Image (cartoon, rainbow, N blue to C red; front, side, top):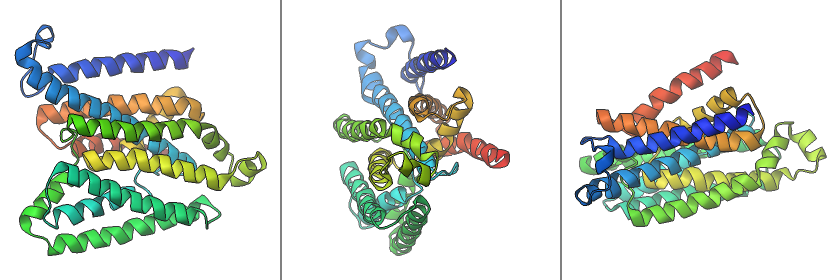
Length: 311
């Protein structure tokens, strides 16, 4: 009963924040004038689009963070722990620092970068026996890619370097309506895989030995979870840039609110909470004209510090 009430409250909060997204901004629009023809360019082409992107990004990053924390039994794991963000950053660095422009090119390059990292991880997954080895290799991939990006930054022109730095700050407002359909398709596929593997996540919490004794094929489950995380986190990074701390912090907030370790509860709870928190962060960043990454960091860092001190 308590869980149902919490889900209802979170859903109502989501609707309220979505309504606020349409009203507030650099120019506030009264609620009774939202659907007037003269306000359509602002409400539909800017605010409604950005609101939808915020919901999709919050859901995707939170679910992928829950998957990573459960897969590696590590409370500080997040959606970018395996180098997916670094792979996307390398793709964008090659495009921007190489002189190419255009948001579709940036998104495509980021998707390709994340895809390459995913293929490497899937190849490694077939060779390693435990999740810890996979985690360490993912961190090594991330460090190697980061080094390459630093070299590109050192050799690049000032204007190109500025464009790349702006991309790393994250943005929910660069997605167009045609791109939204592509992003939504990627995220829906990732979420379907996440739902399919939710029982596997519960079994993984018992440890690899007991999970195998219960009939779980760990390598197959890890491969599906890696694919889901790549689609969720890689898709958002491609179109919105790296958005930090949402994926790491939100699953802990969900666990605290619902007092449960059951992934069948935590997955939808994290999705709703992620959407709510990112909508709230976007409202704050819009009102104070700040990068979205700075707001999500200020929200997420205290949660992470609390988790470290508690454990």
